[in-house]
Image (cartoon, rainbow over the protein chains, first blue to last red):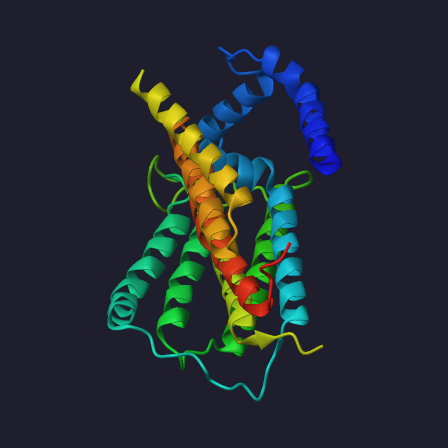
Length: 232
Length: 82
């Protein structure tokens, strides 16, 4: 009884802490100066319709690099903790007809949709991380449907390492070609036409690299969770 | 005005799913309920004109997190107790 009372008091306290934010909230009617400069810079300097991608890849590119690093560390932790069992006994039952047929029909389409999301990240909603997760969910369907499906570890680790390396190299190319204060600045490639898929400098390349990296890392997580065991 | 009703409906759905996830006995139904919370949150983001965040929430929150929790349930044996 005293436990529920304490929980109730804690919930009331948290609500009291957040009450001023709710009471003082008013819908802003115009952008603040930072947001104004981001929106104008994304359209005028970078020639990019998707302002979110402009902020994520260009203006806050260093944060995205940190996110990719955090994702890599999480994947490495999962792969380390769930070591692969070598004497794996296959006690899964075969998948049903609906799942097998649906997986063989849908997996290529899902992977293609993921590639579309990260290749069009600078034009339409979405981007590297979302596309990578969609690709990984397509491979998850394949793993669930086929008992004998195994990821090629060499391929996953190679694509993950090479895409992370190319991401840093593309950032350093901005530093070399455009001078100081321009790490991860994509404007060393031509801006191109408005709403063209090959436009806005190096942003499509950077987002495709992020998509490949995120997709291969999440495939590695799924592989560890599917085939790994906790025999530490 | 219909957007307001849709938002209220989605908030009610996610609150109901949250309460159900807390009070249900089986772990797997709690997992499904948390997936429903993520899905309705992604629709709320879409209605509030943030399609990028909605896409992230739908893929990671409703898709991948649920699957990772299901795999974790497979690895943890006898997790029905408190």
